[in-house]
Length: 230
Image (cartoon, rainbow, N blue to C red; front, side, top):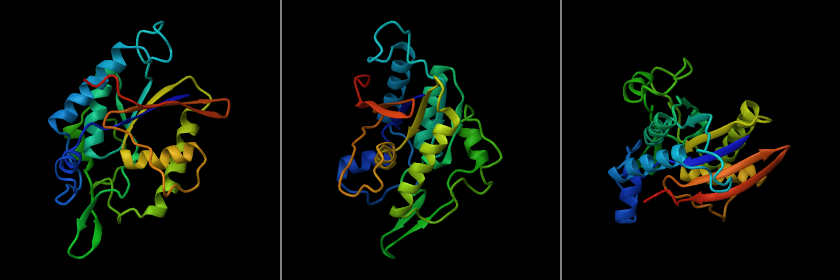
């Protein structure tokens, strides 16, 4: 199996932090900015019209076989653009969400309050290319408290094992649209790091990381590829 981890395009929260250096006033489920849409479109065109630079020019394109996505709006928007260009439906996978989940940051009360997230009917209306099943609760896909720090490495290992159960031992080329914070936890799980506290693996918006799983080995072929963004 070959995995391509793609971070979503620039979100409203990313733009807020870039402009102000603060996340005060953040959205609990931000949309893509105009730049974020362009980044996603450039990424889609690159994956569909170019071979992986490591493989050389003998292949016509990246040969993606599956597209998975977090259920956060910025990820679903990015994945839908990629899926349409690649001719693939988007498969939602809740556990690839950003650290913390969907929450309101109540600074006056000094607490983070979990919120429902998008409802199935909203996802179907906004993202018709997403293959929803009956596992998404009608009141919203999140609907739980804020995800604490100690829960994140457990989730990262869970999605890693789930990925291997679905695609391990195959020639599938799997693309996952996920998030920059969770990327740190996921890559730590891939590398066998139980808990990561002082390191950070930076992944830009629509940066691409390739990880190959071959005969039990895990190979980080490249990290944060950006040559496709203009």
